[in-house]
Structures are given as structure tokens and as C-alpha cells.
Amino acid sequence: MNAGAGQVEGPLHFLSVTTAAQAIAARALSPLELMKAHLDRIAKLDPKLNAFIRLDAEAALQAAGVAEAEAAAGRLRGPLHGVPVGIKDIIDVAGLGTTCHSKVLADNVATSDAVCVAKLREAGAIVVGKLSTHEFAIGGPSFDLPWPPARNPWNPDHHPGGSSSGSGSGVAAGLFPMALGTDTGGSVRNPASCCGIVGLKPTYGLVSRRGVFPLSFTLDHIGPMTRTVEDNALMLETIAGHDPYDPGSAAAPNGHYRAAVDRGARGLRLGFVRHFHETDMPAEPEVAAALENVARTLQTMGADVRDIRLPSLGEFSAVNRIILQSEAWSVHARWLRERPGDYGQLARRRLMAGAFLSAGDYVAANRRRGEMVADVNAALAEVDVLLCASSMDPPCRIDRPADIDRTYTRQARSPFNVTGHPALAMMAGLSSTGLPLSVQFVGRYFDEAMLFRVARAWEKASGMDKKHPPIS
Amino acid sequence: MDDEIVELLARRAGLDKALAEFRDDVLAAARQTATVTQKLNAPTDPRVEPWPAMRPGDGL
Image 1 (cartoon, rainbow over the protein chains, first blue to last red):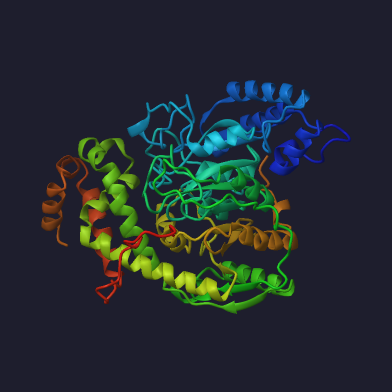
Image 2 (image 1 turned 30 degrees about the vertical axis):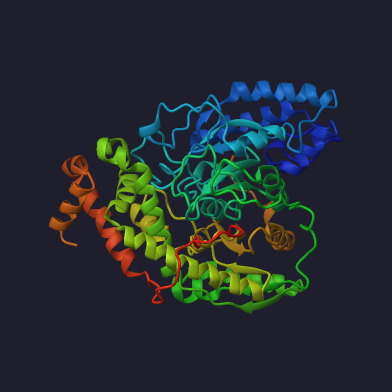
């Protein structure tokens, strides 16, 4: 479906958040038409993609009708007035189930919105439904759960990444223009990488975790997933902010993340962490070539690119896993003791691992973590932004467990869950088989604006925001 | 860790039911941790604090 003549260009389901919100504010676009276009797209494609666990079409249409009346009367709720959003199903939406894609919580209904959802609604966004995830954001893709796993819109035989699988798949396919994901070892950035969209893990503590089912308290982050960098910045502006009831919430001021987005790369210092993908975990040649192309392009645009060394990926990964599995065990121990059969096999294996780690292992990992924080801070004193790999491989087939196992740990995302620095993953190109390749940018604490600036420079030069999966 | 030690630790953790119904999963879970702890270079300086440091400050 296209917007009416003289209004907005292109199919409504691929409108950016920013364009849609501006068009609604200018009364050039009807929120109801926008919602109907997305629901049509969902009806057509979701049977192939399984992005949804629960579609809330009736409530979404009703909310869109209200948004339309409000817009007609000149009353806009905020910068996202009338724009659809999908929510990962470990995040509470009042009145809907928060199943965590698990039989364990199949009957769990949320009584209130998570803080990040409440903020989106206050800004005028409309929730379309709850989205597929790896079970409890750790066990997937799995075929032994009450709902099937989400699939990659670039090729539905392939994995869309996880754990925010439905969020990545749905945003890329045009089922909704933005989604919330969560990221404990890379779960926003992995589907962003696999599905060719923009996914941000903000600075630890920037977005409230209240109302989000925990995986690992000190590694969990909530992040925006969109098709464009500017949309990501807009979404972050909406959901960021101090929450006195979240013990991990930072007392940082809200940033105006869109202000610097178009300032370009001239004069910026970029640190290329080549050893991650060259020696620590050698990447597929296509991935390595795409990363070199991003660095070269930014250099051509006036950035100063130099090599930077950090601790090895293997050790970052070990610290992440010891902390994650220890904290996750403390969350799941009772259920794993009483009803282990209600978990899928992957989640059961990954979550029980924490039972075999000692308190000494946990403290040792957290002591090493402090040193790693200092190492990344030292690197970011030399440069403005780090550039590195996200995934070492293109997305693999979803039905080959051996390939999933092989590629699951071949990534450079978990280092920045360990250290808490903001990290953004986005498309770096397409593989020879037409699947997304990715790049990751990492910034100083609370300097997401700088990340958006570099990411936008790459997006503008490469036109990655114009590439959509060929699914119809 | 051999299987007997894993079983002992699993029972100590209260995973008797899992051990009875999903023994292979319990063993696989334990094996994961054996390899991951070997990759950690714990700080040699005894004064190195865990994250977050035990001091009041400015968050991160």
C-alpha cells in the first residue's frame, strides 16, 4: 500500500519512524491507515516469519483510531504519535502475557507496563504485540517450545539472530518500524546484524530495566531496534532516563541524540579493533572485507582510523558467561529444580550451567571485569569511537544445530555487556548469498550521540537504510 | 569434572529431578562451565576490586 498522492513517498510499511511521525504531525498521514498497512503486512508475512507470539491487532487499531482523532484535533501525545512498535516478549505490556517464549511463564499476564513501554506510549507510540525471543533471552533458536522461532526475512531458512529475534525480523520485514529488544550478551545487536537493521545497546543504566524479566542483572540492557540511525536516536531519546526504582539506573541526563547525527565523520578518531576478527576469532572473508570497507569509507570521509588493542575476545567471552550464568542461575534455580521439563533443551542446558560455578568464579570474573572496563576506557581516551566486528559469520541456516552452535559464540558483542559501554550494530553490506553482514561501533559512557554520528555517516555513504529484504 | 562429581554437585544444587529426567543436559551444562573458567585470567594483584568497585562514586 502506498500513501496518497502528494503525501508521503513509498510503501507505508517501509516508512521510517521519523518520516511517519512527521507526516502524522503534519496531517499528511493517517495513523489508522499506517496501522492498517502494517497489519496487512503482518497478515501476509508473519506466517512465514513467526515474529509475533501475540498480535494485539484489535487494541492497536483502536489506539490508532484514537491517535487519528487526536491528531485531527491538533493534540499530539509526543514525537512518536501514531507510530506502531513491537515489544520483545520478556518486556511487560499491561494486560498482555509476558511469556519469555517459555512454557514456564505461558500464563503470566503483566499488570502494568515496563518503564520503557510506558515511555513509548507517553510519546504516542502504539503497541502492536509481543515478539518472539529465544527462551528467557538465552535458549534458542528452539523448536521444542510452545511457539516456533522467528525467521530471517532475507531468507526464511536462516536464523534472524537472537535473542530479540522477532524484533529484528519484524523491523527488517516492515511489520513495524521500531521494536524494543534486550541485550545481555549481544541480543539486540545479533538480530540487528543478521537482519540488516540498526540495533543499539545503550550505556548500562541509561534505560530502566523495571518491568523487564531479568536474565543477568549486571549485564542486562534494553535497546532500540529500527531501520535507520535517526529513528534509533529518536527511540532512545524517548526511553532513556533515570528510574529511582531500578537499582542499576544511572543518574545521567537525557541526551539529545539526534542533534549531532548529521555532522559527518570529518575529524573523528576511530579505533579499529582488528584483532577481534583477524586473530581472536578469524571472521569469514566476506565479513572481514566488509569491515575494511566501512573503515576505508569513513577514512575517505575525513576520519582518522588507527588500530586499537583490547583484551582478547576469548577472555571477554569467558567473563561474560561466568557472570551471566551465575546471575541467571539465581533467577531460575527454583524452576529448574521443580519443573526442568517446562524448559526447552537449549535454555535448560544454558541456565543450569550456573549451578556448577562457584562464588569464587563469580567474584574472580567481576574483578577481571573491572580491569576490562579500565582497558576500554583507556582505548576511548585515545579515540572517539571503536569500530569492530559484530558477527564473524553471515546468518546461518536455522535448521542446522551444528551451524548454530558453531556461530553462536563467534561474535564481538559481549565485551561491551561486560564493560557497559554503548555499542551499535548495523548493516555493513550483503554477502554473496544476499544475507546481511554487519559492523559494530562502540562509544564512551553516555556518549551515544557520537555513536549515532558515526553510524549515520556510514549509513549516508553506503545507503544501507535503503536496502530491504526481498520478501513479499 | 567426571560424571560422578557432576552428579554430586547437581544433587547439592537441588537438581535431583533434572538429573533423573535430563541427565545428559545436566552433564552438558557442567561441561560448559569447566571450559569457560579455564579461559579466565584472574587478577594477580590481591587489591583488585570486583566491578562495581566498593566505593561511592559516579556510577560507571
